[in-house]
Image (tube, rainbow, N blue to C red; front, side, top):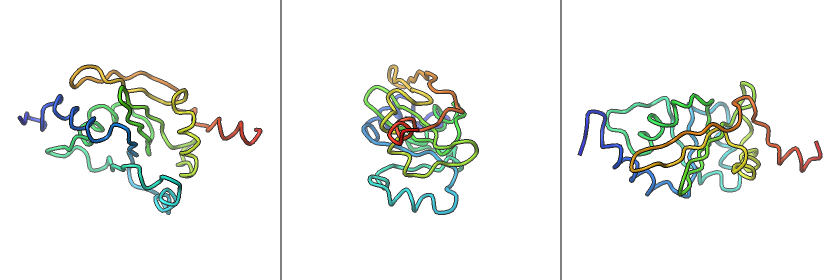
Length: 152
């Protein structure tokens, strides 16, 4: 059941999808200042799973650790990174603008436009396969739905 790098990929993928489909994950390298506290104040902010990528890789990774170190970190997107885990794919959008993390209240705006505006789509392909498709350029991370509503 365990290979040289932990459980087999097909088993890890099955376990990941069984646990996280329909949920969101924020991949981060720690949070500056009171960012996490602000996130928890937002409607639904406490419902996001969070994983600190500084602690990866582990000797026996959990399914989410396996997915992050095998499929998400190689994308080299800025962190924190929001992952929306769906039945057929994971949509990824980073939470930075320039060199700064956006305010947690902007996540709601990002979610509104995530179908069309994401930095990567990780499509599930087979038992353990994922096919990455590029989306927005890394430097493009404005919340257009927010700007439109504000008339900007």
